[in-house]
Length: 423
Image (cartoon, rainbow, N blue to C red; front, side, top):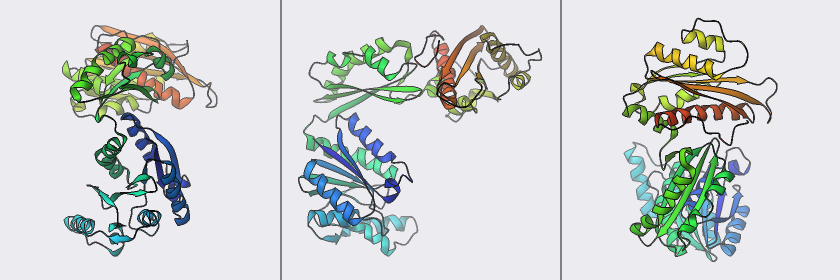
């Protein structure tokens, strides 16, 4: 099925806001085995919108239009949709009543321009928007079924998942029992994982399992989209494939589905009634920020030390010895982590120490990361070098620190070389 997405609005066309709605729509459609053939961005201009709707109606089977359903004069989607379909624009009494109730429950009075949101093409089918006043709707233009959605991201996302995708699946004729299995990993690049997982989808020979990736440094999301006649069929197909993915990616899988790296770390510590002290250099406290806001973190996180200067780090953890000379070492990180653990009484301490290169920020710019995890039984550590610019180093160091802590808590080796390191 050929699908087009049309995003409207001068602010999107001119780049004043980043069009995250399109990426979300496209990603969600890919997750259920549908793909977008065309994406069009159009400003708030009647002639341009009419041309875009007409062209999409000639070449696509289904079209998702995002934006232009608001109450202001530059919201034109309903008007142009009616013109493109050759029908009248009429007041939809059902949606007007919904809007009046929406305003009444919030002790507000509906205004004349809000009534504009209840003006719909006469042939339109309402697509429910349970959390806003913009009425989604569907109608035929040319050979395509058009589905109109609001530009507010949270309204779009709710409607897409509950209303739009089921309609598209029904129109496509695809099996509608679908399951998305996700694996999150750190340390392996997309091309490497693609090679490692070559042929896994072929374990189900009917082609109902699709392998995909979403890279967002420093993590990689590996996705298995599985189709079946029902969920029992889906689970039967998924079983051997997900087992093979776990086998091939091994210790690099940090979590599955909705699990996060920081959540896994916190759960591991909570389950053993553990506690954590954190020492960070150059990360702007992002290791602590990843963990500290989670529910239950108040019982686990003891203290965080943040500094760009190693001498200040030594003072903060109670190390009065002279600073070690020369390059940053694993032994230094072990000493800092052990001192932080003793000082706070935590069961675990993580130290992420970073020695940055000198010079301007560039692709060759790098940093040396020495990290250590200390417990009452001793310390585990590793030394790493990451290139790619200041932000690349910072993000990589945060992820490396949390992942090494996750590995240590799960009894896995702290050191396995990643694709992001320079030997």
